[in-house]
Image (cartoon, rainbow, N blue to C red; front, side, top):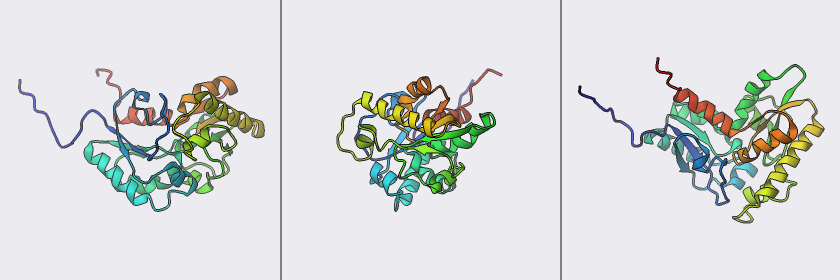
Length: 241
């Protein structure tokens, strides 16, 4: 029996492409930028000039062409779906999807409407973001989320914001970072007791999702839950039918 292999791509077996910010802080297991996080192969592309400060604090101004080019390059390599390394890039959701013509999930924030649909009456979704002062109604609206979604940031913490956004050093005290995120979660629930589930905006937060769930007792969703869902659609499990 003759078997014919079909070509047309540069790389095979890694259908998910990730657009990365240009940063040097540590990426521990669970972080989107750590390849061991994923239970499937992924393709990475660093977008030059897209620093966390520029994307988060300055609204990614002027970076759309760079992200469009990088996304198209990943698709040319073989990516069948695209995601990004920052929840604030929800601003580019429509443009990237239109440009590459494959499924695109720029931000974990797009889960907010889905999670809301699972909650009982009287409960709503809350968000923990790396920068509460930078998250705007534009980001939420671009993700299809209610603009009055409650959220808190980590700016008041000792470690997480300082390492990721201010880039004051290239090492990180993981224990302090975890404390910053747990404290943010406690503030969110204290100020909004109607929050029945949390979505983590920042793609560096999944390592702390388990501790948040244990401490706060509400479901926690993040970019890991988003991307494993996305991958399940482009590579459904084969049940042998």
